[in-house]
Length: 231
Image (cartoon, rainbow, N blue to C red; front, side):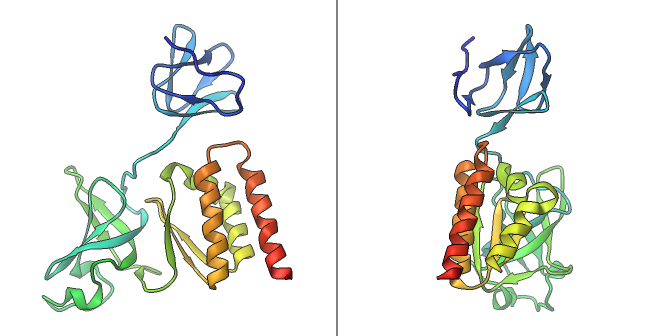
């Protein structure tokens, strides 16, 4: 059994790799205990919080759950429904009965066409992984402006921060409207320069969301916005 690389601030491990001794530690997600050692079960970065060793996966697929807020892109239009790419293994189905408009049969394309983005919720997921979406609800709509950026699903918690502190700070600094979908897509709307700054902030999250220097990198980026505003 191979040992992980030691001495580095962040350790990348693969399934079967020994992370370290079990003594005095608890085992979190992405790892198991075996012969008094903690063994990785995923490809990812080792993380220790309050004596619990976990492995944050490099990439996590989006697994839809009922009630999830998602940002989808129309992939196909039929006479009475839309198929939306929701960044998962299966497309989401939006029937015209769950659309926010009164849609006549055969006129679905007049309301939303291929390539359009929409804010929706997962209505249900059945045992065959069929995902039914709804756009009936407060704030659910076609996104006709702004930008949609993809981020790793496993970094969403870091982007939001505790009690949404990071996300709220990003909104306040950029003066942008920002909506984070559970499927790893973020909608940004505001002035072009502010959208650009927010895109860069999300790029930092992509590259450093798994690292201990994430907060310091974000604070450094925040200062660049202050300088632009003072110019």
